[in-house]
Length: 252
Image 1 (cartoon, rainbow, N blue to C red):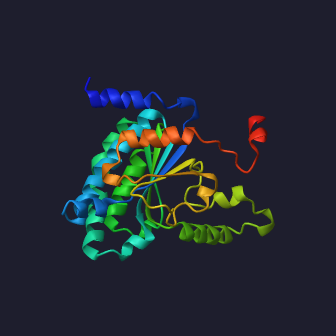
Image 2: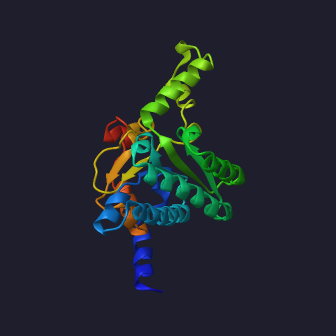
Image 3: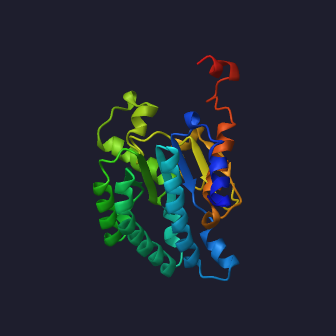
């Protein structure tokens, strides 16, 4: 066994499998800066970032994480240079085409959140194929946030609720959550952001109410399995009280 593999196994052994987060959400930040620091075009960072997606998804599957949500493309990202957006869309289609078989093999169910209708028809086609081809899988959910914004999601949920004729007097947090893009999924327990930024950037605003936040200076293309393990160990060292006292939580 290589030293790197041994070190990774030692790190993984520190994770308590009984207290894993059910849902991890990641703001994948730093692809452009990774490339610029190396004198490469920004698209090189996105390509390297896609490799990181594969590795981290596989590691979450091995660990037994139930849901992994990745902030892949925000509503605001449409304002980036047209050439970069076009490359990202092509890369997304290529990624899905290549990964459907792997997701099927590993029991991963694929789904998306966001304004998918804004994506190119070719990308929407691969999204549909990936979702349909993995619909019966029960091992883990890989949830991509595409053309996504948290405020927009909340507004769309309110519109759907009104269109459904839901009586306002019967509105609860649970009822409203059923109209969100993430309906049927648990709220994220842990939100990770790479690249050193300390904000959530319009990501899962409703769902993140009680999430633990973890920020790392590591750029997304450099984010490795050991970095994920470090985030999990940090998460498991925290006390989640959900507004209660430590004594009250201990009695539950």
